[in-house]
Every structure is written in C-alpha cells, then in structure tokens.
Length: 277
Image 1 (spheres, rainbow, N blue to C red):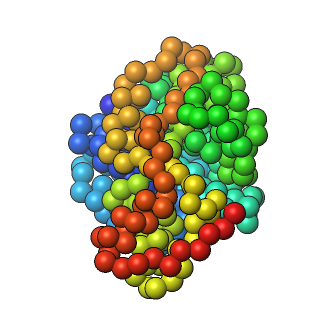
Image 2 (cartoon, rainbow, N blue to C red):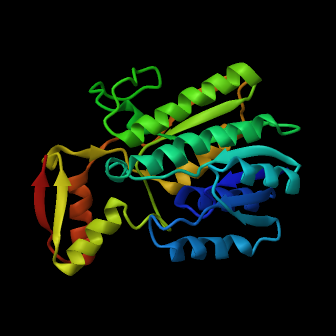
Image 3 (cartoon, rainbow, N blue to C red):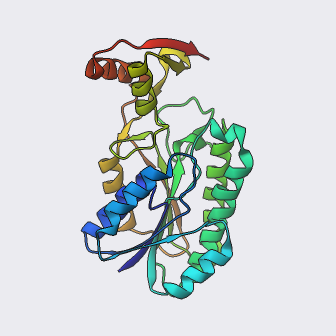
C-alpha cells in the first residue's frame, strides 16, 4: 500500500514513516524543511529514511495547492494519509500568527482538497493537539470536553483544522481521525522541547525557567507509544463520512520540576531555577 506522510522530516513524522516502512508500506514523504529549527536535524532524519527503497521524498510547501496537484500526478496510487506537518510552538504562535494560519489552517485545507480527489482514500489521520483544551480546568481531559476557550493562537489553528476536517467528512465522505497529542518526548526530538532546552541550560549554567511555577505538570508521552497508537488508529478507520477525535497521551501528569530533577541527576549538575507566571 502507498501512503503519504507529511512532515516526514519532523519529529513525529519521521518516526511514523520509519515504522510504516518497517512493516512493508511504500511511503511518500513530504516536508518543506523550514528553518523553525535547524534543517540539519531534519536532513539527518531523512537520511535514515532514504536507506529504504520504498521511501521517496518531495520537498515543498503544503499550503500551495499547486504543489499537491503536481504530487497527485506523480503519485496517483496514494491510499492513506498521515498528515503530521504543522507549525509547532505555542509561544511562537504569539510572535508570528500569520505563519501558523498559513501552515496549520491553509495547509490543512489544501491537504483535505488533495485527499478528496484521490481515487481511493482508506483513512486520513492528522495531528491535532491537547492544546485545544485551552483554559479548560476539568481533569482529566476527555474528547467530549468543551474546546471553546483556546489559550493560544496555536490552539486556535489546531481547533480550526479539527472543524474543517469534520466538515469535509460530512460533505465528501472522507474517513478521518484527528489525534490530540500530549507532550511527546524521545530520540530525534525537536531542539526547542523542554528536556533539550533544560539540559542545555543546566550544562551551560544558565537559568531554567519554569512557567506556572512548581505546580506545572505535563502528560509526557514516549514517541514509540505515540507511533504504536498512530498506526493502530490508522488500521481501524471510521466509516466513510465520519470524523473522529482521540486523545493520544500518558494518563499520569508528571510535574515538570520532576523532569528537572531527573536531568540534574543524569547530568550531575544543579539547575538554576526561575519561576514565571
């Protein structure tokens, strides 16, 4: 089977693409290799995938429908889609909301337009985010909880993608599942992730900033568990015309302060902690 993985040079996309190749799928990877973080890391991930004969790669901007139209001509046998490309960064979305609107909203619409024109679509699985729960204080988060109080523009773009997917499922019968990922960690992760930034700060003797004080906790979820969940979801598609939303994450919030303590132990250095609201 031929599947499309967008964001194939990204953290989650790379691991999903590799798992698909290992189980015998033909994988078409797409990524724009943008400079949000060092493209060298993305190139290194791609080099690992390039060793598989069943992997091919296309570098282009997904938000341009012309690029996807060209891909449809070159790769007419795509049957499944893992849409994992996105502009990440909750705080960064406050600095440059236009980038997030273009990639996460316009790019998502372009992908849905591409999907509805395929000869056959078994399932479209796409990355959403736990950030859609926003200012919701009820715990644990459930898929049926209200998501009408986003706490960042990043969350707005992810919720927009969910609503757009639901509409396309209704209008065009596309079987889709959106995955609300909770804090993912593991090898080949993004350099802006907390465990990398904290480790760098500790090694350099720089302050480690903890937002929301000592009470901050996250549902840290290991990448291998995420990949298994993504593939299991893909293999059990909803009926045509249905759009599902599923939480993918650990069920035990871990204090971020505990993460810092683990890093202190591993690095044999004390962290200089500063607290921010």
